[in-house]
Length: 158
Image (cartoon, rainbow, N blue to C red; front, top):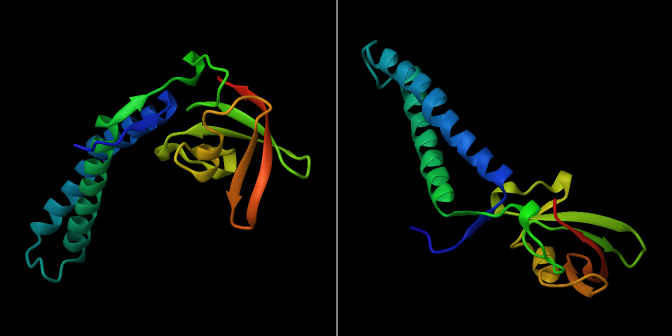
């Protein structure tokens, strides 16, 4: 069993459980049925349905194993239940860049990263730089283009 924590929001946890359930109860039985049918056709060495089906079963089983471990190690934290004046897991943080631009990120679990929707992992460099900070704190953020100073202008939990 893994020693590291898998912090996750309730929505992210439900997505993991849903994917696990779908793979186990829907997709895997379909592939098993195809493999069984292909095996009944005789020579397996030249049977593409059998070979690809077995490969797909291995992929599904690896993903099920991974999801099972992530679910077992999950520590679900509901941002709506958090009351803090500091940046912690689940917070939506609005930052002001050096150019005066405002950007908002939510700190989520590693399985929930969604760059398009500004959801970043609590293990990311940006999250590490702002975790534990308060409103109006200046933070130095390492970026590929160099370091940038940002100011925390809002912290909310929802």
